Image 1 (cartoon, one colour):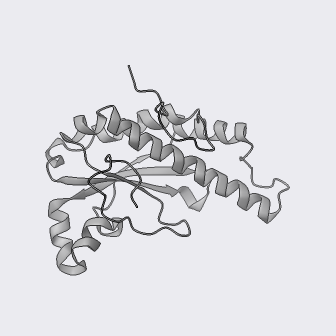
Image 2 (tube, helix red, strand yellow):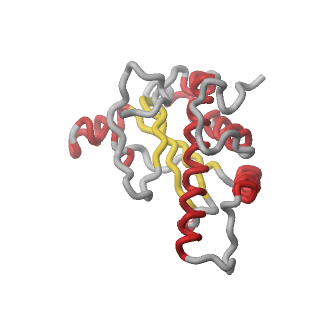
Length: 194
């Protein structure tokens, strides 16, 4: 049996129960299961990097990656300890991409249901299209954060890596994004960090 999404004690958000969440969760768990088991002891952080195909907010993707102690040591020489350890720009390149097939179809259905979907050629002003895009960004980011939390709580990360590590959900193209600060060890691994 899987843990319900969102967890019962999850804070209220504008997206009470995104219908595409189970699809995103299954695809992300599958991506984690494909991580080389030998990397587990070396991985100290997982990265859930949000991006979009052709910068289109209607085509979001989640890249599951992270960093290892070995990569961090190599990057520390050039960039300093905190910068290399906690800035995703210095982490391992690549990763498993999630967001095609059932995830994309379910995301579209949810966006249509919420009234945020638009098609090229729709009679929208630039401001209306921007509002829809912002809502789509928020919808996907909220779902990624919920999935990170759920996969930590249900033991998926523990099974994939042999231990739990912080999960940093980030979208480097959105205005206001900054590299994460070191996680507070008093917080659960996927809790938002100050």
